[in-house]
Image (tube, rainbow, N blue to C red; front, side, top):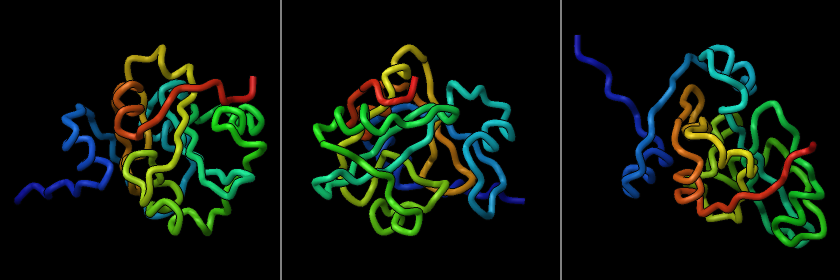
Length: 161
């Protein structure tokens, strides 16, 4: 029986174009499940798995924040990191329209537009982090520095402490 060819996501194609090494983690998934459940399914340590959050600033611009799955985005720190007065989470129903991805498959790499992106600074101390691969059932593992390159991101202190 022929081996089924892995479907590459836009994020994976961008990483390959930039010659950024990554590995994939796949899991069975037909609908949204949160990142903590995914980490548990794949036996991944929570501190290595990051979620991608999309916000809108007072200026009406969109911003992307990548933080550890067990942490909470500090809205004041997040706003300050992108020179906004305030930021609010976008509505779930708007994720696809704004990013081109669906809930649970949203990654900072290869969104419809290049939004200002911040990765929690603690990621810099890790060799590898795991983020959504651009579709349900797909996670990608890469170095935090490579994620920053691929997503045009900077590191910042953006979580609640």
